[in-house]
Image (cartoon, rainbow, N blue to C red):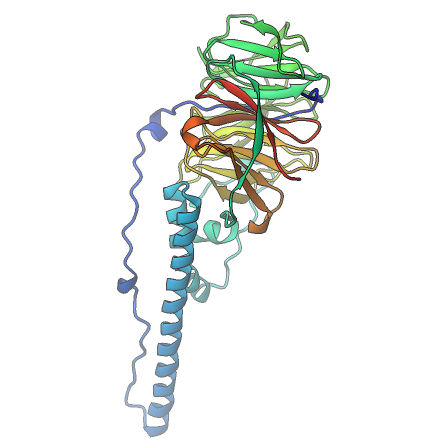
Length: 412
């Protein structure tokens, strides 16, 4: 096998949330197309000419209402076709269908459909009700056909492999089952196995690397812990994340400025820290009326941030200032083995879809820019969680069910 070329990759993980999320019950609204409100006009005794004009207006309104009803049904049917094709997050896709149904009425009743841009300070971003404006402006469903990805086995010696990253010509994998960080060479041969930082690993769930080749490990257990290691895996230092913020956090990335990004699953936010543990940036995913539990985070070179979520399983794209730019629905997954992220050198985002046994690529903001691949053999055999992009453009993914790491070949 070819040797791996160093580079940054986003991390893994998420754990079952407690409190508000764990106890949240989602009720799907009943909707009957036959019960939509009527738009019939009233004709009053205003004289022959006026009555004729009023009658013409009523007929025109009735025709518009019929057209609107037809448009509504067409949009609903289209939405349901997406739902059947995608076989993904039922709640999120139901919302998309209902949003399509509401779109015609919404646009005729209000000419102010654009969202006001939130403040640029990510700490102060308002998280008001999403409403129809969010759905009509931001949700981008996948409408294409899945392709089959060629793949090969890299290593099959793991128990619960989750986070993976590529750096220093090596592949780094955290195994939550063995409680270790494992270093593999470019051929997939194990070079070393590290079981602790300044404390024994409890539940290592994600791993990332910075531009200098230092390796960062996120341990979700016992209050949460982030540690820095050398290229060989030797412990260098702990990052004192305050107030147990890393507890049960499952996603990790390190940006070009050396900031450590955490997907804080129970906290419904992603945040960046420096090596001293000081919080520098925070972006909330706690939108009213949603269940967007952050699972992983990936920082893009333009300053924007991608976040994958469980609950309403999806990928969100935020600006550098914390403004929500886009949302893509994904196949439903739990928060422990949720979807994870990796960016390639061209800025395309790769996302694992654990319950589908495949990966998803986002290269733009249109449905035509979305592609999906599945591994042959059926999703029951493979639960892809961790993901990294090698220097030659291949994907390294972990299979938490079978204890394997694969190398996937996808088209450019």
